[in-house]
Length: 125
Image (cartoon, rainbow, N blue to C red; front, side, top):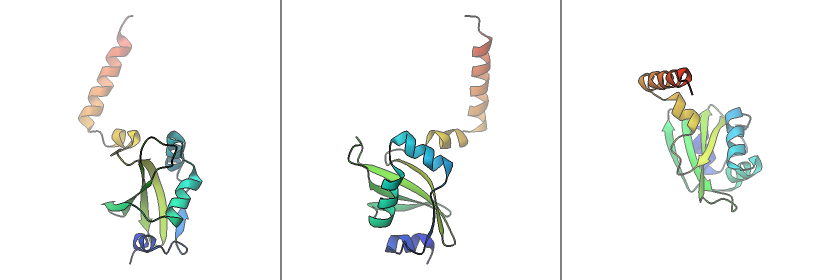
C-alpha cells in the first residue's frame, strides 16, 4: 500500500505532508484559497474523486470554498515513500496551469513565439 492509498483510507496522521512548495503557495494566492482550507479538506474531507495523473502524481478533487464561483478544486500531489508533497491547486475545470502550459510547449511553438516577439521588438511605432 502506498502513501496515497493511506490518504484515501483516511490514515492521514502518519503521513509526512509538505505544504511548502512555492508554486503551490502561489497558486493558493492566485485563486484566493487559504492554505488552511486545503489542509482541512485533506485531513477531514473525503475527496469527491481522485485519479492517478502519472507516475507518483495523483489528483484529488474537493468542494471549492463557498465564496468561489466554481464548484470544485483539484489538488495535485506527488507521493513518495511516506511523504505527500502538494504540487498545485487549481479549479477542477482547468486541465493545466499556465506554468505547465509553458513547460510542455513544443520546441517549435517556443521558437515561433520567440521569433514573433523579436519581430515585434524591431517594429517602429
